[in-house]
Length: 196
Image (tube, rainbow, N blue to C red; front, side, top):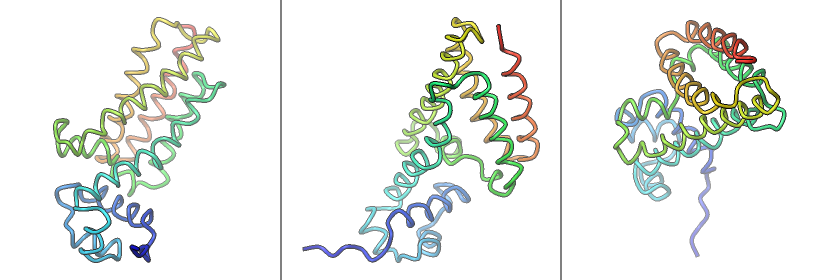
C-alpha cells in the first residue's frame, strides 16, 4: 500500500502557481519550484510527473480557484449591466490594492503570450477565454431580458469584454495603476450601454 504524502498537494500547486506567475513557464526552473514549494525534485516528479505536469496543475488551479469565483457574480440570475460594470470596477480595485501582484498579470494570458496558442500547455487558454465570454454573455442576456440593452448586441459585446479583460491584464504588467484607471473607464462605458 502506497504511503500518503506528508505535504498538502494543493498548497504545493498554489506555491508553484505563484512562481510560474512571477517567472513564466520557461524561465521557472525546477530549483525555483523546489525552493518555493519546499519539496525536492524527486517528490515533485513523483507527484506531478514533470515540471510540465506541475505547470498544468497550476493552470487548472488558477482557472478553478482564481478565475471561476470571480465570474460567479456574472452568472447570477440578478446579473445585468451594473454587475458587469462592478466586475471591472472590482478589477481596478484589485490592481490598486496590490500593484505588485497586478504587475504579474494573469497566468493564462501570460502563458499564451509566452508559449503561443499552439503549445499544448497553453490549450487551457481557450477554456479561459470561453469562461469569460460565457459569463459576460450570461449577464448581458439577463440585461437584455430586462430591456437594459439590445439583445442583438449581446454576443459581440460579450466577446469585446472578454478581450478587454485579457488586454487589461497585459496593461497591468506595464502599469497596474493605469490598468486600474482603464478598468474604471470600461465600467463607465458599460453603464452607457443602457438602452443601446
